[in-house]
Amino acid sequence: MAMPAGGGPAPASEAPAHTDLVQITNFAFAPAVITVVAGATVTWTNEDTTQHDVFAPPVGLKSPVLNQNDSYAHTFSSPGTYRYICSIHPFMQGTVVVTSG
Image (cartoon, rainbow, N blue to C red):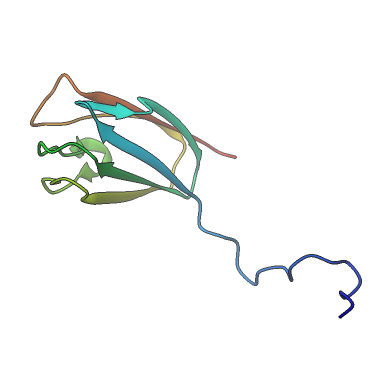
């Protein structure tokens, strides 16, 4: 069967959601610094057997306690630098840098 001219998939009617992943592993956020564009959703997933959270109330980050394999997602709508910690283990620190695109 012949492919239609242009050959690739049809364009999506809506722009895909921008999602970036941060793993919580070995008592650290990986990557420790992530850069995303405004409107992106960042998802943290706890891969440790120990409970953790994502905590920075001034910028709206306050996940529930995350057990192993639990995830928490937050959409960053404004450019800026957002620092966060695990409030259970405050030595665990991370940063989300949001650009205007």
